[in-house]
Length: 342
Image (cartoon, rainbow, N blue to C red; front, side):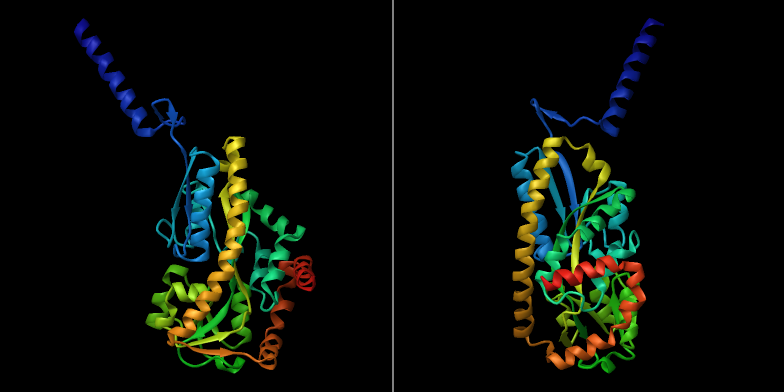
């Protein structure tokens, strides 16, 4: 009888230990007195050689350096973990810790983020960077707390250009009857409607196939995204318009961030500041390089507007502003325009 009791105790202890190992503990593993590093999963949808990809890798390098190895950043590019439809839910749930979505992806949480899609709002990249420093933009970045998210930084990609497969896009009339891939957002739908075109929301990682299969006739993107995604293989015509922006907000899971030790959080903040400076440099350099690559490749016919041609497009899209000023906020639009004049 005694032997059975002893055996039961031993088996019970084994089960408890096994369950403990299987479920994991809140404390990091200890290896020879050295705590295991804090793992930070950084997921994004673009290639590793894109501005976002290079900047994410830079953040990894800086974060691990500044924390003396107490943090290990795992970067997952090219939708390896989540596409841009799923990544917001994934970071909210804590399945990843940091993402870098296009600002347009945030309109479901705050429709004011649609400012980035207003056609011809920013005349230069310098105007964009100045707007990011305004109180209006900082309020936008802080508006995600209720979703268990926190905005850490803004990273640029660049101005959008139009591409198409059926004909050159030289006048607004050339858009009529065509369908374009867009990110989610009513401003983008209104933009193409003003041009007499249709639009369809398609995930970034699925855009190449949609263009190749003829699901859509064209799309809008930065030179670098067009280049690195190889859209020149499935699109014949590119029109340089600089009509809108693709920029990213670096977002972290708020619960995860707030629970980090203060010294770790400070080091990661410093790493993000430096990575952001690098991101600006990379975006400027790589977008220019990609434009040159696309021109030299000879697969796409380039159309570059005169001042008069550009004015026609600007006039055509004025109606978009009247539709969305109350949604986006006059204060945000005015701050963007003010930044353009500094």
